[in-house]
Image 1 (cartoon, each protein chain N blue to C red):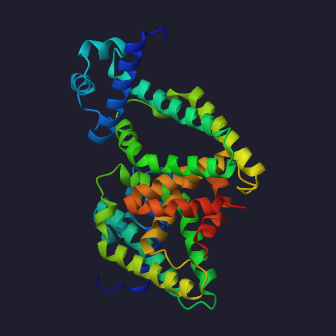
Image 2 (cartoon, rainbow over the protein chains, first blue to last red):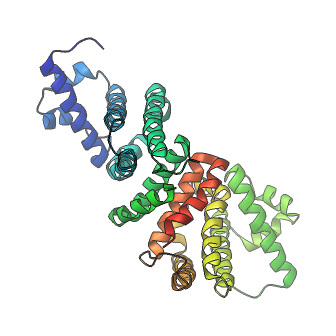
Length: 181
Length: 181
């Protein structure tokens, strides 16, 4: 990506955030002009950053991944590796209540979220791997689980919350217990 | 349902079993004549029991529920209530690897599995409730979870296996650990 002036960067971030929230709660049919209006920028600004709706979807997913990777990187130096791991694990599951809307919206579109971001997916798994290894070294997580197991439990936790709604949140600590040594 | 002669009952059961396995692994497009051939009965026999494909779908789902309810009823008198509960819980998750195909197939059809069997759904939850209460009384399951929590964990477990495939099976004991007091 070519360098953007700082107000352009801020505008881009705001558009992505508004688009994410709008699509997640209202579906993909909301027009780009309405996204622009809510983000407080001109429609031209949105179209300059994201020439097509597909480009906008792709950027939202990339942005979500970048946030997940950045959060894991921040926690990788935490003083309590167990708390860092379980905090990340729990928040990932919890956040899905919002993401779910977006995922469902994407599922109905032609946009293939699975194959859109292979490199970021790999980076994300690597970042979880660092948190997991540190927590295992600290004796806070059982040694016989790997990143794929953790991801499976996170996906299971999301399905749990999807079924149970808000009441499902109190089940997240139980899933953490499942990973304790 | 009117009384069926015993060979008719056997034929009906065989057709349901074959139809379940066929739809689960190959999708709903397999013709009824092919189901009849695999079950070793005439197509007329299948159409007599199930006049439409929708009636056949409905009967498969009802049959699956009946089996789940019967299995829970059998285990309700088990000497070890903890083993009975966790055995049922684990098998429910494990069986989903087959059921998943059927569920996906149904998801693509006009057949609404959610509303098709409200009474059997209620009976199923009640049966799990009996196993859960006995296991809690025996001190094998934490006292602060209810049937909806257990169902949420079962659905989460299914999503876990769906993501992780066969390797996910070793995570089921971890989910059991999540329910331990």
